[in-house]
Image (cartoon, rainbow, N blue to C red; front, side):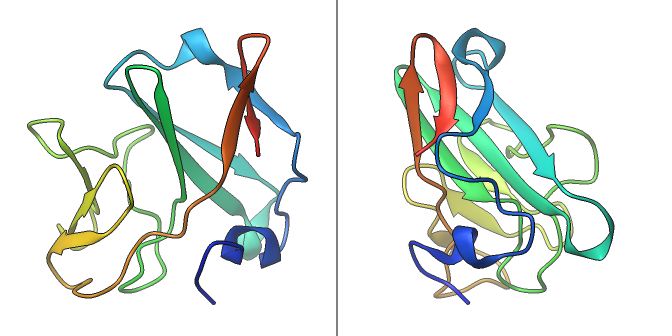
Length: 124
């Protein structure tokens, strides 16, 4: 399962329009994780902010279907310019989730559409 709608096909996927957080909760250059549901099918995503732009992806490494982070909200490479899978050290481009280096060669993170309304981040 991959592609632009893969996020919506997973168990516990929130409905479009679901409020995630106030925009101010994610600082410029920051990232934050969100989850819905419980157990093995928990639905996880991350939101990254770069200036006015927001990027959302399933928090799921395309190499081994595990969360990208070990620690809460720890998604970025040391220099803060790329998304990093802490399981396999794979690197992904922020703007489109494309794999740049590591065991994810030729794959991408699954995007989750986002929008901002009245200062709140919503699933698109």
